[in-house]
Length: 287
Image 1 (cartoon, helix red, strand yellow):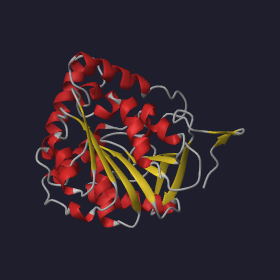
Image 2: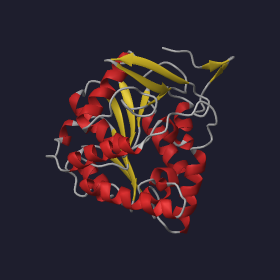
Image 3: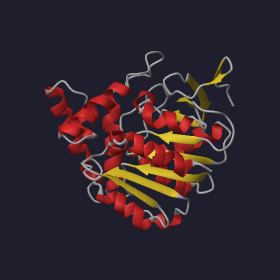
Image 4: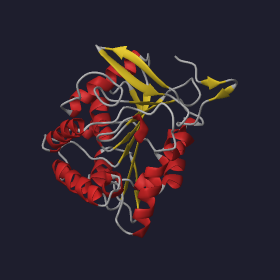
């Protein structure tokens, strides 16, 4: 386990956490790990076409104040080597390889969007590994509308290009006044890290991951009754990428799960309401 201090100070700021690498199964994985060492780590599973720089520090930092956080690039994404996973199941297997290479046999998971799909598959394949699960802006295998994500994504990328905006402003946030403001603030926060930025994600990775999501959406449903870990589910009430109703579906099918739906917000509801959500996530993840 690597050192995580500057002088006598533990690094709890995601913007300051150095990028590290570890090799396993023929792949070199890039990762960052703010927060104090010891105990069960919280592993962050990122969204579509995203690298290490796509995590909102207003979500990561409150958790990293008391917990060992690990964010990583999927195989073939950002600074991680290899070919991008062609299916969600493959991405879950890669994640398992990464976690075990770090030497952990128990983790908590924080997942957003595509990351939530990967996290579900990992939890079902290796239930002994996962202690607690946070699923945000995501849905179940075979969920209605998930196979439409590609169409929504390409349309919003075009809209963003025409307005010289970041596509996440359209994909993650409503186009009302609060949503537009939240989108710009979110994109600005992602730029707070000014050194050691990650490798840009090319369009080819986007296409491969969209194909994996489409296949996931058209697959037979998983038996989510097998997920018995404490689970927190959160979303906005107007998620156009992964329909909000699918968060309710997850809540019904994962026994004992908790559900938070934020009003007047979209796919990035947890980022628009980051103060409320980070507090809820910290409480949920506290031992």
